Length: 233
Image (cartoon, rainbow, N blue to C red; front, side, top):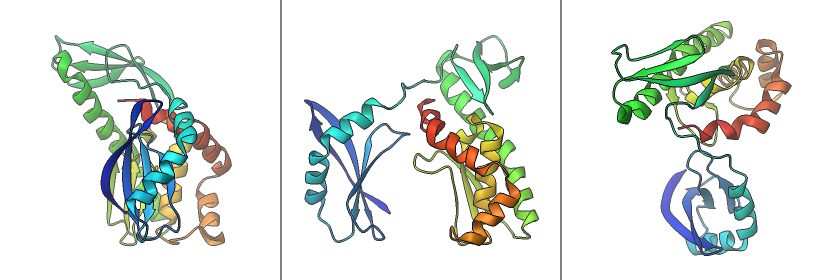
């Protein structure tokens, strides 16, 4: 899939951003909310014109309006916000007189340095902490399946929590660090199982269930609460 163009449509007099993407595997025109960016993704099959897709989006104005209104309020990285590290609340505290970088202590995330650098420093720390938390678990899951891992990347994806490529590259959203630990472990088990089965057949789900007993609860949590994790930052 590739981004073909950025478009805007008017809904109630306000411009709404559309990312127009062409997907050769898509069979129909579709819309979805970009939880990370707060816009709308318009997906086109390779043989459908962009103008046709824009007409489709205009016809779905009510759906777009309702979907955007349901998005959680954004929470920019700033002093005083509360981040749920592995579902445990941590308040962000600015420590301008310290030189210790970023660290956690007694339910707080302390960020040193100048205030204007806090969003970047906190974001970098969260990604590093996600890597420190997720990578060992992914390697352990792969070892249990006796499969090699080519590489593990930590990204900020808006449409999926993890992925596994045919070459054995595992990728995870850093925002899993904000989910309960059993949910993170489920996503790791799910993607590791794709090292054995690149499908969602019976054998695949058996491997997932053997590694993660709480699959149903984790999937339910992600459906209900997952979109809210994209409001941070």
